[in-house]
Structures are given as C-alpha cells and as structure tokens.
Length: 116
Length: 113
Image 1 (cartoon, rainbow over the protein chains, first blue to last red):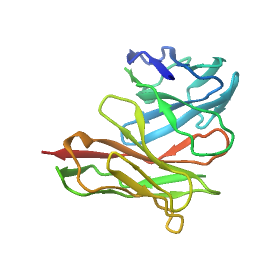
Image 2 (cartoon, rainbow over the protein chains, first blue to last red):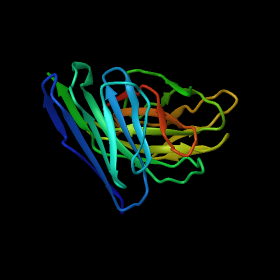
Image 3 (cartoon, one colour):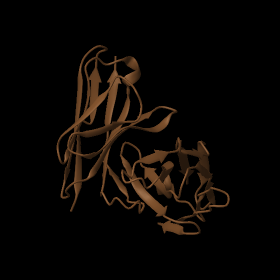
Image 4 (spheres, rainbow over the protein chains, first blue to last red):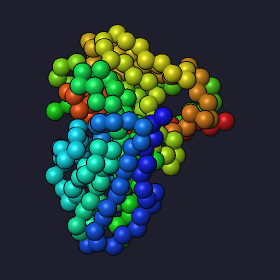
C-alpha cells in the first residue's frame, strides 16, 4: 500500500534561518506531488506542484522554493525565513492519470512551522 | 482562475442535528469536486467526491450532489455525531493533468453531546 511521510512534525525557526521540509512517498511510481500551506484564517493554499523529476510549478510567488530530486521525494526550502512563513505545511500526492478523472489526493500529517 | 467559496463558520451543532455546509465554485471546463475532512492535528483525508454533473458522492452518512446549474456542491448529513467534529474543505480539480486542487477556506464543525 502507498504511504506518505512528512517530517518534522513541528519546527520552530528564527527569522532569517534556512528551511528544509522533506516529503517522501512509498508504494507508487511517478506520482504528482504537491506542497500546500494552511495559514490561520486563510484556508489551504497550493504552493508548488510537480508532475515529474525536476519539474516544479509555482503557484504563488514567495520566499519559498521546491525541488524534486527523485521520483518520490519532494522538498520545500527557504534560504531565509520570514515571520509570514509560519503555518501548517502539507505534502500530498496523487496518481498521475493525465485524464482529469478526479483523482484523490493523499496528504501527509503536516509540519507545524513557527517562525520566531 | 478557478475558485471555491464555502460557508466559513464556525458551525456548532448538537448531536443528531442536521448539517449543511454550502460550497459554490467558479471554474472553466468541467471540474471534479471534492470534500476533504481534517481532524484535529492531522492532515486531510478525502470524504467524498463527484466527477460530473448530477453525480452524488457519499460516505459515512455524508452526501453532496454536483449541481452544474447552480455551480454548487453542498455537504449534508442527516444526523451528526460528536466524532464528526473537524474542519471540512470543499475543493475542485480542473482535470488539467496535474490534478491540483483548489480549496475553499474550510468550515470548522463542532458537535456537542
């Protein structure tokens, strides 16, 4: 069966420090991968998605970047964190069907990031 | 671009009450529609979905019908339980191959015994 691992679960980082959040998927190949952020009162916002190794699409210009160095690994990074980067970060994956058939997305447990 | 608007709440109900959470969408083409649920401290999980007009998604007593004429996908449950307390998100997927989801802001539901 497929599983998604996201770590760490919680993180407290000072302003200006770097960030690296990692997400890996097991039990599937060639998935679509996503990073979402959930900020208080603002719902769930898509940050990045990837349909293949090295292919990253950014939805919102910001202080963050993403990389997909391997098929089932998705990394969210920042060189210098801002206070506004605080939030709950969720990684997700879906089967790549290419047919627009309403494929379900499977979410990790999330990382609570607090920038102080 | 595509967007989802849902009743923001919070919503507080007594056990066995009827639940409706409204959701409307704006999209080009023919999106698939979803309801996701987030229990405290956890990630999201799919509750139900519908992929074409007039489809009804259902799961765990929850239902939602894809209404193209009103661009809506309202979530309903006839009798809520304390264990249904969670945040509910309406979402759409534009079917463009990436299957990326556009979410509403979420509705927090609290069910009291």
